Image (cartoon, rainbow, N blue to C red; front, side, top):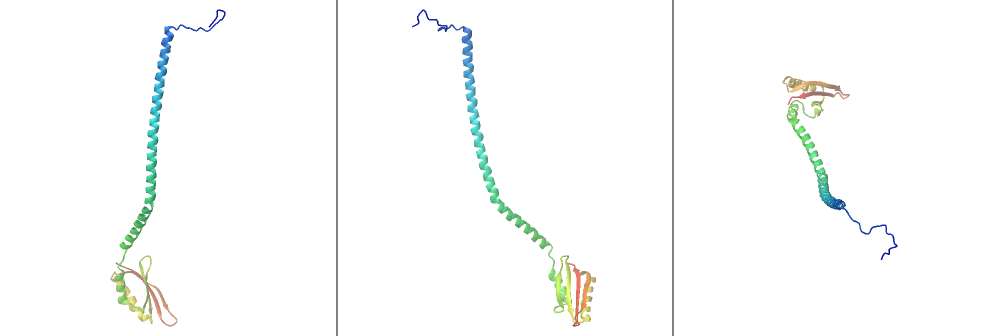
Length: 181
């Protein structure tokens, strides 16, 4: 209860104008709409976050699967490369294969062991014959046979590489030539 001697500067009842009521209603409506928009945007952003994080997890799982598959296939690829390289080497060897047995048959026609002490082929496919004989007369038929094969185009560039007479009187001669295959 208020007495008459009390001074109250605050009005207990205010009279609102219709203009203020309209502004207040408009602000309430705007605030409500803004709140709904913020909630919708928050919900939309939350859904997008869930979608993108799910996609990221799927991509990481796929990446891990691919990394595992690549690491598992790495050894197999190494084996395949090794086989491929070996196949290439074998192919080169097979294509460069020479009929050495035919050459050996031709050489054995004019010199045989024990006179033929050594036969070898160097890196340039030069055939090197080392012949051991009792005298120079035993070497001459071999040299003549090599020259005849050269004239028949079976041997190319025949060469008497070395000629030695040992202390015991034996003759050691080395011939080299290229064969025509």
